[in-house]
Length: 112
Image (cartoon, rainbow, N blue to C red; front, side, top):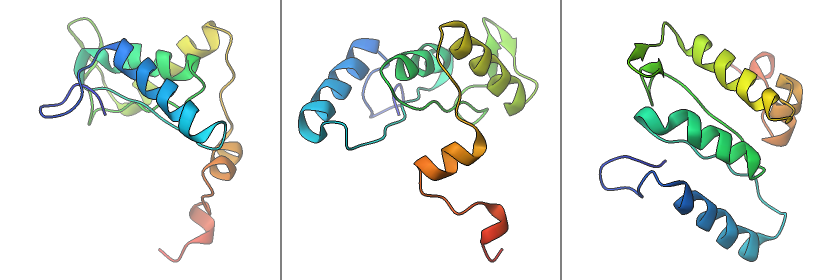
């Protein structure tokens, strides 16, 4: 999480540095997701995707969909990041692929 009080600054160079260090420590044996608060949300998601990571958006991180434009929902932010990620030539994981990658059970396999 970048760009919060007491955390690492929302500079894309910080994200690149952290991925470089993780690569040297773990090779290809890790999965990462990077996200940032406020106006940095979308640029960080795109950078994360370009560096091989996952993305996360939501109103809990930013209330906006664009400059001075409030988002109507999390879904609107998800649609935007999906469009942008696909526009730069990257593929979006299906829900089943994401559950497999993250070793999640899925809603129909939990007791709540």
